[in-house]
Image (cartoon, rainbow, N blue to C red; front, side, top):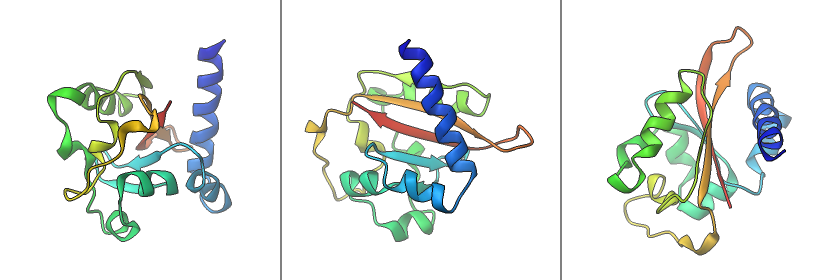
Length: 141
């Protein structure tokens, strides 16, 4: 049952991402950290809660200054494989993540890890022609 609910949530998120505008505002205000990124790891969108928790400036996202793949460490190396799988059309759920926000934070900021986000779902953003245009990640408790 849990897998069906997760699949339904992912499909709903994919539709919201595809349909910018008002739907994009829903993602922006979603209560879990969400990031949309290009194949090279550069964030093109981060919702309000991720911006706040990771101390990211919206201007840095708009300028393409946040590349979370450049921050992969041994502790979170499974993230790299999850991102690669996105562009093969796969969805990946990672559990027990260590320092989950460290991939997104600015160098001069130490995030508070007591927020309970220990899992993340990585999924493709598919355009109407079945082309995978971007990847997305949502941190979960």
